[in-house]
Length: 436
Image 1 (cartoon, rainbow, N blue to C red):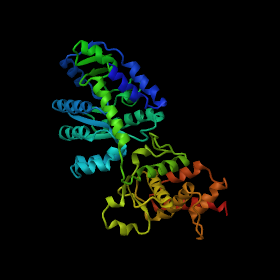
Image 2: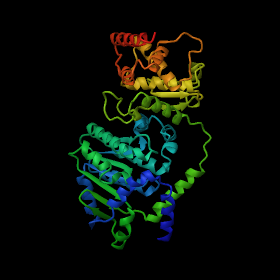
Image 3: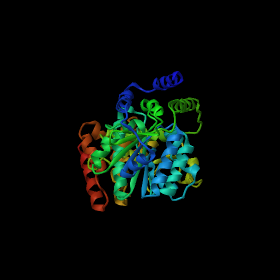
């Protein structure tokens, strides 16, 4: 017990104060259990659920092993799909390529940025993915950025619920299993968000190795216990093993040295900065005046070394390029003006619903991209060249003659036909004439 307290205190001291209230809600709710469950009773409760939320202590491989065994056993009796927190929803297309056996394990790990974005052990998680590929009808990414901001953690619950709702639409007759961090599974966290969007589902929460329940359960030789009508807890590891595994993860993170360039955080920060400057919400759950879940639309960011050798000639003198057809950001080196311009092209693409730009709409995009580049880089002048329409739009904005809501509407305006493109271009020219 003394060893457990020491490890737990060491870990707890590294949790930001703003995240403790969320964690406290979890620990306070799961302090007692109602009854011991036999293996048969546990199996019956899981079989009766249409959505099973499995609590994951990310650093403990036993948690991922349990999830793999559970979906394998369930898949023998019914159709099953799996949702996971460990992969960002923006990377679903990468996960799908691996599912179709189009890319190997090492490429999947690299392109998911698993070690940087997630950071826990790859091997037990990959075993879970392989089990899902062999036994289920699909595996789906559920999480979104920002993971590190615990002030926004409840928005991640709402996002995950929306993604699970989309899975239900795609697999109306399957049982859904969801592996998500245990602290998200307090009744007022992910379960509440899920019930709001899927009120007809029979939702069961399956926790693993909850500290407050462990010692009493061990005394009763219980492998599983019931907590109310909607939750159970199973025991496959002791608390010391659980916390020691996390402490070892912390040591590994602190000692890790990675000399490889990683441009993705800089690119994503630029995209988010531009979006927020224009008044967009990066986590909006609905279309209309906002791109729907902008965090899920983020491009994959790769260095030129990751791309075919002949692409360097196509890149020319530019330091980076956004490729909308592949939703890919290729970067040779980070130069602020080039990166800002390509981030603006991505944002306009996302605002258009990821639809390909017709040739007649190119002047519209060029103007909005130039404006956005100046918005991110105010010091970026015309370098002696004649001002473009985008430069004039920026000056009009500085003069207070065009509002942010009006600019936001321009980014969201559909330009799918020559007529729409001409009308939008005329609107831009009208706005800038007031500055002349």
